[in-house]
Image 1 (cartoon, rainbow, N blue to C red):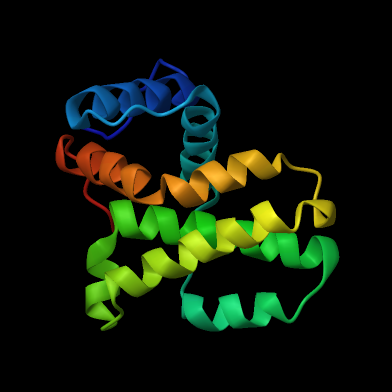
Image 2: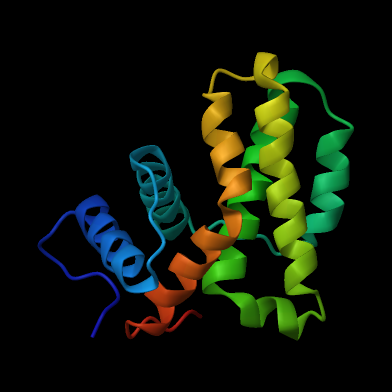
Length: 153
């Protein structure tokens, strides 16, 4: 069985998986968080751009940037930390990288975006929510992975 079934739009399938995981975990996400998670999952499964480098290094490099470049990097880092922590934690273990450390970098990336709202066109409150609900999102992603026949490469 494939993770996503053919015939139904991938956004719809991601959204249904999120809703199911949310109800099973008892964690209630707001509409904006569900939509952001759905779009992030779709982006990274079609682009296949999960990092091959150490995220902590990318995070430190992003902090040295300014303006839109910094915001784009921080968003990418936050998204990657979220997906790796929830869907691919074994990748961290293989590289001897702490899951807690990766979660902290992801949360901090979103927090930076929330506090530097003049550097990007996005809703700062969304990034504050991503920061505050990071662990719940990780739990939902983990449930999605373990409740399906999803086997990452």
